[in-house]
Length: 254
Image (cartoon, rainbow, N blue to C red; front, side):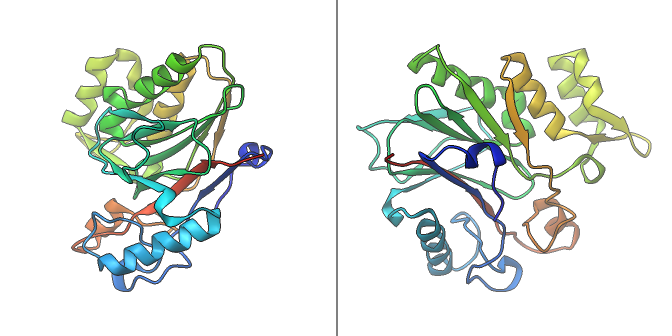
């Protein structure tokens, strides 16, 4: 379990970037696999989600998951749609208390957000595709729609780090088409390959909105097998599937 020093200071929110530990799944999913989309036994995943709910001190039915597709879709949970536990999106925003919103990752970036003026929380699943296509911008704009006067705290969680994120020329070209300034997030590797700094790119997206309160939990999901699931590592090892870590944030009554 990993926590933000910044978010820990606020008594009206709970949060956690969960590791892969302290669950009940077996084999390649050992042990706190929270991915309902994985090939793990569904009953084991549900038990793991109950463990997460208990640690966050919320009822299991109040833990909201996303059906993540690397989109730029950001959904606001209000009083009218808070009965839907698994929402098709890659970001959730809410000001509803006593529910928890969550993001599942296995190398992509989990982001937790808290607007302390308006009591709004958000979570984002930011892989390269969602980040490039605007999931961060869409999330922030949804928050601004609720109230433009805000003080936003952003915590960027564990993800794959630069040295383990090798990409091809086609990948590089997509980012250069967005902006030539994106060259600064790439470093030459072997011929025709680049190393990509996803974390730095995510930070840049928030910098464009002049978000000043940003914290990074700079842990590498690829190299830290003990604590994190990793899509790339599982693929490299020839495993047929991979687990997902969960990151959660909730507003609680003062």
